[in-house]
Length: 64
Length: 190
Image (cartoon, rainbow over all chains, first blue to last red; front, top):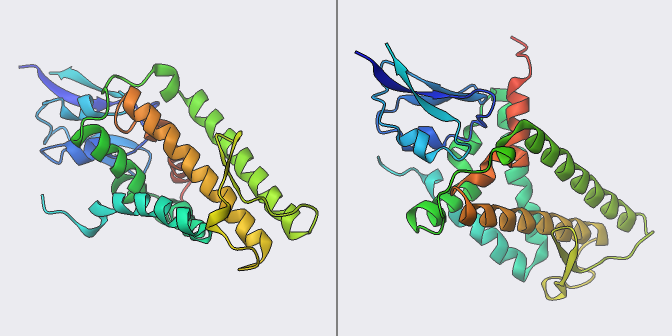
């Protein structure tokens, strides 16, 4: 079954940490101060991070 | 989640402007917000400051999200683009350099102290009540006026984009954020 997961666009992400702040599952983190990285095993695809990202760089992608 | 002491740093970003209103020399305290993130980025390779401690980011989140002062519309694409971010960083650093130059001019005696706050690098606001001539060396006061202007201008820009777009839209092109991200990108010595 396809599942949605949050994926940050590395080229646009500014690593501000807003996604980290709003994620209810603690599934997304700023990786080494460069960009946001999702732990796919924790992400439930709720999309809260995508809605809150000031750069609009997180997209919910369908995963197999 | 239990709040930590650093979740209240938004108070600091308001306090900073209040202190500077009464005595401009407090503007020097803003150097903390300037040096700590750079130090963290260079020595620990992280943006922990932006992520957890930035009082300005917290203030925008509080006003924009919790108090609903933001339209919460997507930030325009050009504003989040690398060209704009790096361009704004260069512009900001030039203005910072100009401020240092003004400080040097005052220190060398080539120019006298100007007790004004310059908004948007253009509009001069008289601010002479916040400083009594002779309290310190003139260049120390000049730097305070310059730094306070920079902080006030950037906060106002941040507030404008907060109202128009997302609460933390400022973060997408914040010169400090861009600079610390660049520092994090530097190759690790280890």
